[in-house]
Image (cartoon, rainbow, N blue to C red; front, side, top):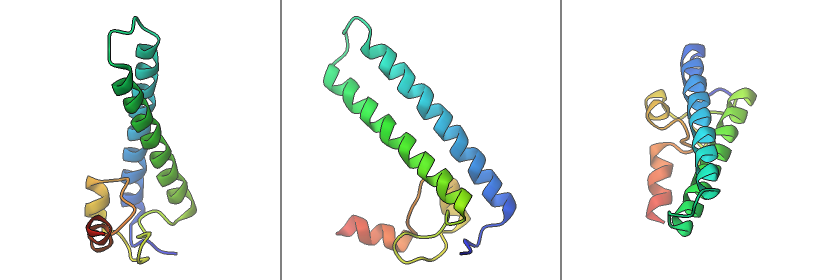
Length: 106
């Protein structure tokens, strides 16, 4: 399966995904540490933030797995290549813009 991305583009995106993953893991650790604190914050908001960070970590790991297997950059809807420009802006993108718009309109 070819994604239409060059090896240089794939390396740039891999580095961005790894940076994003490191940032989210650190964020999750900070949020969990805050939950052990004195409880000044709203627990519901904290739990929502922990869940969002956890979800983002899972997404980043899934993207890195797809990158390793060679399917990263392929639209999960139509199978077309997702342009580098889109992935550069949104490395976690799973869909080309056409399929993303369809999903959002549904």
